[in-house]
Length: 443
Image (tube, rainbow, N blue to C red; front, side):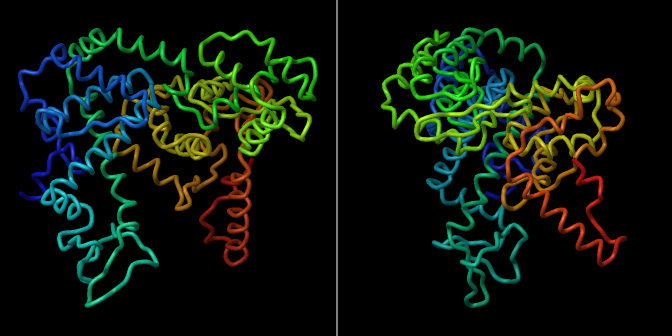
């Protein structure tokens, strides 16, 4: 077997359209009705972050490819970003487990990533003449007998990203190439399943479907105080009264209420202290051992996917989101901001479903989003409102520039300071050689 013969479920980089469609053609006739039970089990299990796909349980890799593609597509169509992340993570470890049990396939997979001359014997070993750009740099790498040795904890960091690409490419190829009537048939067949997942979200909390970048209990506890406009500083007695008087709307908030009421005074204040330390709830101003202060916050925070809709209150963003096409430089500026709040996967979802980009391509989008992320995992650039001039209606008719209404984390301002220092240093040497324009740093 050659690298080119690796199944697209395992390796989809550089796969052609026909390569990605081959698994569907290989299992004809394929009936969604006949596979409903299998797909239902995967969708239901996606509520659990530890799904065990087990590729060996499928009839074949082609069968697994089709079932997982459809399951992931259904979750994506319904914007269940957290469930899709759960399925993606399970896919990664299921594929790696499958490769580990098939040494020949694993060897080909590693050669596809790191080069033809690579061998794996505890460490990843390759001759110095065959070192590829995909080999991760680390102080733990070492050279011996004219070969480079890369320890497992170094090269294993690279592997999940390649398997994730296969997962995303499978879903994208299905979206792009399956006939509309088949998609409608799938939506009809799984209507009850989707409603069941939505019901679970109402009972257990919406974050199990859509994700949340803060502990939901912290958010719930602070939101209770934010809804009470009578005062800004609350004693522990005030907080207990507010919690007691709250009327739950769902099963999950009923459970949160009961949990908070069972806590001792010390443990209850600890909930708010931990929420404060996350620095993700700007309204939480101060927490002492006996009281909590809440301040009015007029700035936007992006804690869950629904918070993105806050941006529509600004005419320029609303116009942008309603445009048929959005210039690349504008998207670059916008997502250099959104990446301070959302994961790369969530940014994919925004581009595809919120901006409704007709030219969305998972591979190109992943490459472009990744280019905006630095080695430390933080956004690389601060573009400000660069490129937004064509959408601006003028400050006299606008509530204010959207970017000034965002509650950025402290890391944003630290990054801004570093970029400004870098700009000033380069300007002092040669004003013409500066790689960061002054407009990049205005806010």
